[in-house]
Length: 187
Image 1 (spheres, rainbow, N blue to C red):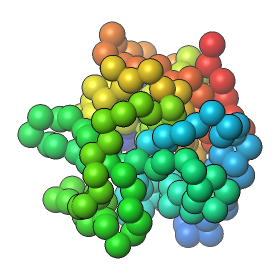
Image 2 (image 1 turned 90 degrees about the vertical axis):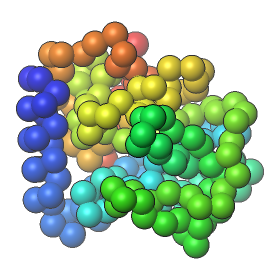
Image 3 (image 1 turned 135 degrees about the horizontal axis):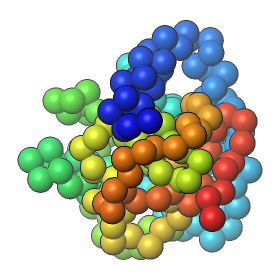
């Protein structure tokens, strides 16, 4: 399938998820996420969810990290829609977040992080068995990941689609994808 078709289908499917199923799927993601080895992860970049679009609730992962790996530095993105670039900012808590014009929570006072990043949790609408993803189509994460030597992990509420047919040279491949039932490694 083409990205545009996948994007449309996945967005529609997500919006049909009821609250109970959404909670079960997110708890499954948390369970799988908590099985990762965090012994070498000093800095973790994590996207903040648009709950209205039924994105994976990464606040559950942030809470778990804070409790179980308090020394891991958590950084979150802030998007510049004019340049289509992102910066990473130290996560200070819910009190520092505010929605932008696109309904995306962003840090307001968190200091910009310009150091190393060990792991990036990447939003997606769908992914395929080769490790490529479909996002919202703006390319923010592909540009962000171009110059970062970090482990790249997608978070998906659904299993993989067979193949994204229109992958291009700018698409950055995932190392892993976490679903509510498994962690998939891409070679």
